[in-house]
Image 1: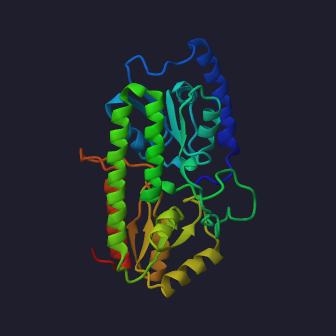
Image 2 (image 1 turned 90 degrees about the horizontal axis):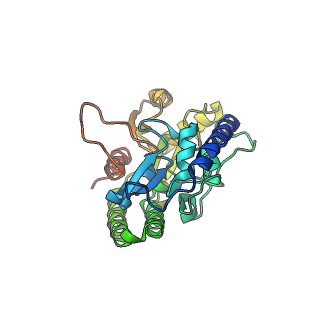
Image 3 (image 1 turned 90 degrees about the vertical axis):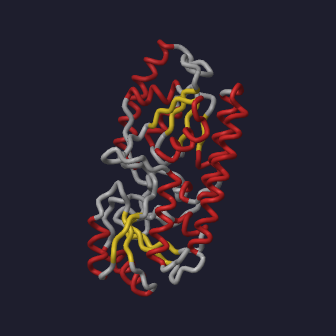
Length: 319
């Protein structure tokens, strides 16, 4: 994700911060809970919003800075959004992932900040290798792969951090936050076991994806991720990288090239066509598209289970 340079985004955020500071100075400091009695929570993107909703339940009012169906890598905050961050009772984000959010958090009055990246050390999965941006230049961002939510065990650690911070911000409902946290952690533990069992007998353990978002998932379940692109799902891979991917796919008996929901599948389609392979979705859960035609909305758990089914089909694993 966003390890890339983003000077324009930061400049826009800085302008927004100045405007929001003026507004907040007139409004005074925020209370521990909003006027409606709910904890005012700002989440930077979907994985943080899901935790806030699951753990906070009816006691929180959530603002998600990244709208549904919007790719979060290049988020640029409006002055209103910066003001929301500054005045929130609690802010959930992942430091280094979205520079404009980091800028706003730096000006926030909230005492209750949850940085998902602080729940465990980030790992370098060589996300920039083989793309036009993987050229040795310095890129803004976290010192490692930010996609920790794709390993349910790491995501559970973030959930516990959120539950603990909500209890501090709103002690009156601490018992409910603790219960909701335990319930969610239990669901994530069960999901982890489903992945362990479902991938145990895979005939190949290498999968090819358009975006290097699945390093933690691969590491945790003993798989190998071969990514066409690095941190930026829309970057152009070098010819050398494309040749490496094609060789890895052939050598490891790949059947499928995975693409994601919020980015054009054109590159994955091209690589798959060249190799005579299928394409399928492996969703990095950076954001969720709104459901069509009144269908029930998916969430982290349902999409991760679909990811498992798609991996099983591609890797020759049986339940």
